[in-house]
Image (cartoon, rainbow, N blue to C red; front, side, top):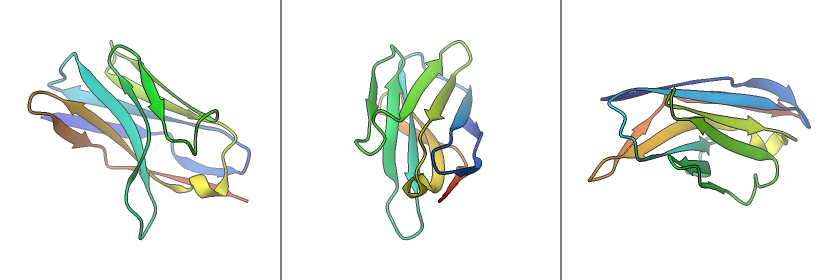
Amino acid sequence: QVRLVESGGGLVQAGGSLRLSCAASGTIVSLNVMGWYRQVPGKQRELVAFIISRGSTNYADSVKGRFTISRDNAKNTTYLQMNSLKPEDTAVYYCNIKQGIPIKDYWGQGTQVTVSS
């Protein structure tokens, strides 16, 4: 089994920054994809960014240039540096890891990010 534990959410003013962390434990396959998703009430969960184990990244258009995803493979940890935050970034942010054949999804418990205007 895989367990994901997020940290780093909170309340910040518009224009501010936050850094989210997600530590994975358990049976971690070396080739995997770690990512961040977010969800607001009444809407579907959406992809924010992901990073594969070799370092390639991808971002939602809404966060390009403001958010940076990174990872430390030795620690099985991924980070999401969020700069120039906007009120519309307010959501519960979930960490995700995809690994194995067939691919399995694992999710963290979520961390609240609130950006005040």
